[in-house]
Length: 114
Length: 112
Image (tube, rainbow over all chains, first blue to last red; front, side):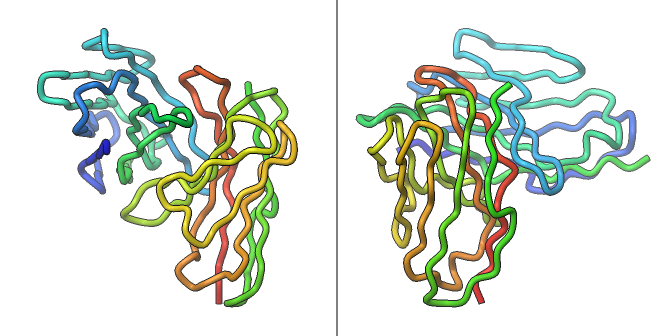
């Protein structure tokens, strides 16, 4: 079945720098991709969703790139600030006989230092 | 925005005891999910349901049961809790065919 690898597991940047997270997946038929943010002690919040017909999507300081040839999804936080410190997860949507589900990467703990 | 609540928020259980985690959503979503989160593993799907009175096995169902008595409620049951089930458990819901899953705040379970 689908497998998702995410790296790096930990990332520390200075305020104002960019933070870059990469995920790779294995199933070329995968069509829906997601980035979630988890703040300490909280559940996951959806940051951005991307369909496979999109190569690049930008929203509010976040840039998601999708390279279908290499089966690679990335998230770039431009000009990170301390409030961006959290765990970030990529996820892909897979379909089965009993409905659909998400497969998550292991997460990236991002620390943004002032 | 979808509201998903979980109870309890944290729990300490003894090995071999029974644990029930509850999830409630208020947005009429068809799908509900239970995940566990462990360091180094991200979130892994335990059970899910797309209609009341029916549940499906996820990727790691062993040692867990699920119950969906109504569209709004989805429970995760550990009949015989074990040390390896210490984790944070998240419930989520989504509309059928929708992209987004909405997550609850999580339940931290410690089995001693």
